[in-house]
Image 1 (tube, rainbow, N blue to C red):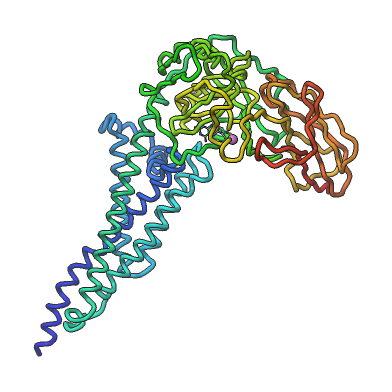
Image 2: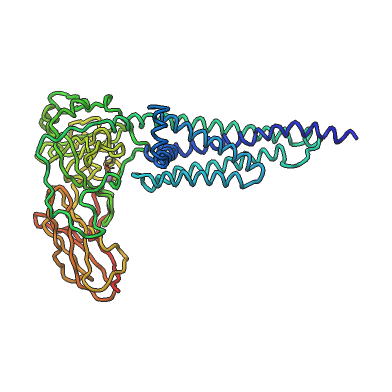
Length: 531
Ligand SMILES: Nc1nc2c(c(=O)[nH]1)N[C@H]1C(S)=C(S)[C@@H](COP(=O)(O)O)O[C@H]1N2
Ligand SMILES: [Mo]
């Protein structure tokens, strides 16, 4: 008679616990997962945060009337309210996932997966995000699911589901051990969430401040006449690279694990080293200088033949030579070592920064303030040189020095100390391996020989004679050129190659060279099937 009564009392106590512990497990798992996702986003780019993306998606989805109402109700705090609501909904869903996972293993995981899919949809449908943006919500959902499973399994060991716990098993058996194991896992997960969240908050706060400065920045108008783009510079061949690369498509290469967040008011550029007088320039002073706006095609030395680590943008900036003239380089100097906020360095020949080419201290890219990823607030762009010896982003110092005394970041890692861009050409259309219709097949692409200019582009089929392609008008010798040619082809398999010749009459070399130490060479070669 007495046993059932004792059982009720003994099982009654721990069953209050699981009711609370299950949603709590969901909450800490969700918090740690979201922290991991936001941390991933912070490392990739400040633009891909799943929480921010979800917020953006909500703003887009909400009817204008509701939006106005929200602004009326909350004023400028509307964004804070939005993020708080997302956090509340996420918290509710996480707690629910904990409860469901305890009721039925897999159900809570499914809910977490669903939330992750919503985050993924929000991130990838946002404008201006790269494919890697998808990583953050995937990491968030995966970590949440893993932790949720781990925590609920431990909770189930401590307090078995729908099992009548008998007194001996509970008191003298494994229960205290299982309880400790669950509580330790909870504490560990909660700690990880707090640490991850704090680190993320530090990053995102800094980049949000920089992004705020960026979006309210008004770029000065260029003081020099605008560069005219000839009508014939753009060919109308579908699939050919855009003459000017949009910022969202522009390749990004750097060693920065997190995008440096620099507030323009705190930014300074110092000119040091072998100079008559050291010069310091702040952002306001730079913006007050007479600006020049030029199209310049920059390329990465790691661009393989046929690769896409190259882009053409309209850069707004003040000529570096003007700043160097203020400092007065001393005789014997032959290099400028530029340093970025994160310590990365590049060695640029002094001559390339003092001759009449448009080497610029850049503040604008395609009519916008420099994107954070591309060096905000100020970077260097030098026509004719690979990025690793010239295009320093998040620029903070120019040290006038000698190649004999200083070396740039990549030079000590197996790359050259000089990096003039090699003459190259690429076939954009048709893509390698495509099948095209017999008849006049249109081929097209881009060719470049920065600061020398391209004189001629030729194409050959199955190593036959070179045929001259139509070369589009140049914007300048510092940009790439589009080219196009129609060739009659009957059914069969073909190998198609392209080569460019620079304005000195020097054709690009056929010899294959790898990207290291100073740039790849060889002909871009594609196969096409004509049917
Ligand atoms: N601070 C900094 N600047 C840098 C780099 C870097 O790693 N850190 N990489 C350089 C290289 S190798 C290239 S090709 C260009 C790429 O510029 P982008 O990312 O704007 O296209 O930036 C250059 N500037
Ligand atoms: Mo590069």
